[in-house]
Length: 307
Ligand code: FAD
Image (tube, rainbow, N blue to C red; front, side, top):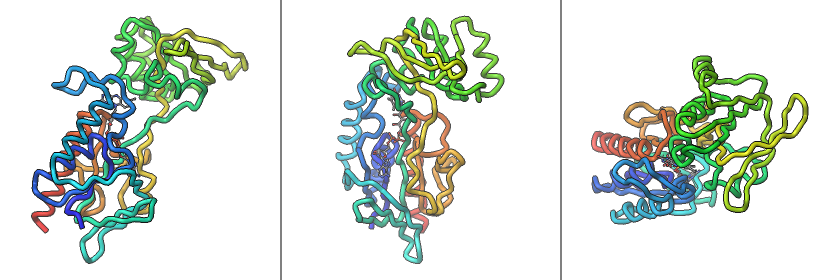
């Protein structure tokens, strides 16, 4: 069995693996796709001390750093179930391919994915105008026209944030009212370069083959179709944690499906820790996920030397 088994190979999992391995304990990382969301990212400009890099480059650097230690890396492994430790003190992780691994401590770092609109053009122009993270990609649209899809807290926060950077923001809300907190809505309405469109269902992302040029939406009240000219589209309709496989495992999840952790990265199950976008940690960012991975690994080590 492993001393520490990390499930997930994104920034959180990689950081956890390096911190665990540096304690000289038997460490493994099992993941579906080493690199995680970073692989889908173009420019990364907020990883402090690295002024600018690209996602695939950072993903490769993550893997190289982990590989420089004695860590078992198991790729293409999709965890399907977690079985809490019994009398032997070992937690079991089962995989979709039928295999299973046992460990004294497990660190869950399975991350999250942005909910997509599922309309034509969205996938095609992802990273070429279609964006999901205003903290990450907002500055790339300086002085340009963008839309934000979604009027929940994250959509309205994104629109306020972007309004300070870009030339103009159009927020499209599907429903008859926005679900965001009233203070945020008031702030948004006070901004001169923001237009809000209610009952708007986005039906298509438009592009010129290279990048986004606009979108098409249906006014749900009138049934009429309209076109907007844009340089960018920020989709803010939810972040879905990859935690389906933990249902009924005894690991407590929030109502959004995020793994509940404390400041030490401990979950509700002894010996099971978690880090990164899969958890209740506020703000989902690379630098935050890495810090959380380090925290979880140090907590796991602390527990090992006491048991
Ligand atoms: P992830 O990166 O999501 O990694 C999860 C890992 O778990 C992956 O290896 C995955 O394959 C694996 N996994 C998932 N489910 C299972 C399973 N059942 N079994 C086994 N393995 C599984 N952040 C920034 O700080 N700056 C940026 O510029 C930036 N730009 C972004 C751009 C885009 C397009 C996106 C999508 C995100 C961006 N982010 C950015 C956010 C950042 O990528 C995440 O906060 C970060 O990757 C979270 O790290 P993580 O390790 O928690 O999860």
